Length: 336
Ligand code: OGA
Ligand code: NI
Image (cartoon, rainbow, N blue to C red; front, side):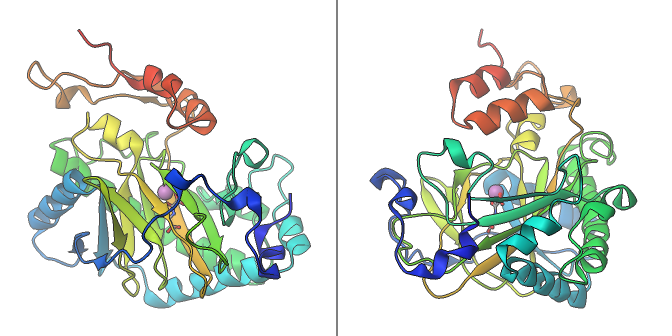
């Protein structure tokens, strides 16, 4: 299948991108709201920061962070390299993503399962593991020329930031601050999404409504609107703030916290004027990790609503169909 960026300037939206009416974005002029909490990580009262993060995780499953310590220049350079990557000719992108015989660097269009989709999504993406850096960087793209240097430095910073946020969350949940600092969070992956300008934003989406199959996700969304969060039955736009990160609780952390934190559903709408490039840092467990409600967070008055499962089994069911009975069956505790 050809990358979207290679033909999207042709003019009209192909029929295979037209979503059924009930899945379309609906009203595109959703007011941007400041209601997704913005948390200043430079706040000197650690307990206050923890309280804000927990509250945002419980109410929205999403928050933005500012004064997070990742250098602004590095953020700008990373975004530039990311945009340059997707602006390269399709064949160059394919060649640059084919350096690992085991295929750890993945380039695709729409979703992982393009051939099986009922309709396609208006995006291209590249993703690869990033930790430990020296085991993966040799398989990353070498073009644009500074890709490895810049994205490498960025992923080191994001790893540190992720560790910090996870410590805050653990403390907020009343767990040991290193409760998640083990195989539950050691396999981060960088992704670079690109959503080109779209001729018919009302008929299609960049990403359908989904939860991230992660512990947490730390997103650099750039300056263009598009990300929306589903809360209380309606969509809220996430306002682009310069050099901020959007953090969301993943589905797995929702399960570990026994539903206390929300792995909120979100989606990406397109627009006809601007292309949009975004860079999620996905924090995943090891394949063999067992995921389930932490026992210190369940008791007689708050019984486990999920049962434990292996992360690989979750991924298999999730990729096949995130809304399917098979996934619910895998994760739901038997009701008694
Ligand atoms: C994702 C995602 C949001 C965005 O990649 O899972 O939700 O704005 N991305 O690109
Ligand atoms: Ni997502």
